[in-house]
Image (cartoon, helix red, strand yellow):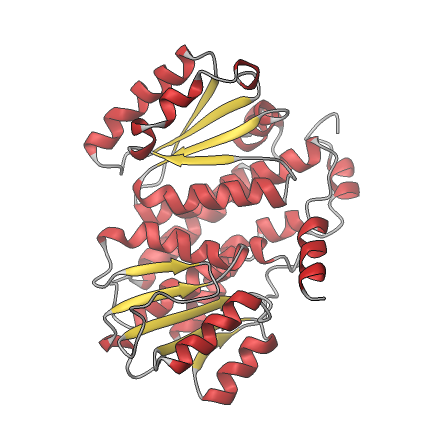
Length: 356
């Protein structure tokens, strides 16, 4: 693609309606929040002493984002599990949220049976499939939704559903105090960013397009901290699946204890790497101090850097801000690489081989 401002070229490549799904992120969040708030949660839910969010791939991303966001807000520990097996501590005092967009994720279904056998409190989030059957057969509560605001029908493009539904469940179970007004404010801000970074906004006025152009031909290295660590992981996932490109993510302060010494070799990789620092005024003071110093070290190793400073007034607004940004950047990168962002042939190939 020669220009990200060519809507005709975008429409030719985007056969799976990924762009439309991005444009509907705000609607996804609103639908899931409102619908879960109107549904029942398990009676034993508020008594749970810890929470597990079990999911894989795109279905786990919402849990990762929520886990990072709520580190200083949740009254019980929250852990994201992306394995076949649940941690040994899971028992009757654990709320297990099973998240599978299709409802047929092999690992999540294995976790579902483990949760049942251990007497855990179970809640499901899915569009149907075997997970919906499991919930119905065992009398478990769940949010079985119609993803009508995700026309691409790709789990990674329906993150508004998974994030908002998990937040709503945790709120209804009284693990967090999250007001309807907070969510509405976050949705409005997200919708504003969707407009700002949209395909109709030209390259010279569009941060997402400008960053995608800079990242073309590079290995993006996404750097974040604290409440945005889960968002950075999502960013990397979207780069992989949408743009069909390699990406990495590291968090500050952890990377300061090892990664900086790994920037010397091999020399040939320096021209391929491009660090993108996600800076936030809501990081703790000691973490904020580390960002310019880390950036300086990276640049002294002859590696390109870029900074994106979030503009959200609250942490919850920022997680949706980065979700919108990463969705658009990965989409625009797909366009620049001449890729239809929707198909994931190697993931599908792997699943087919595994099922034999």
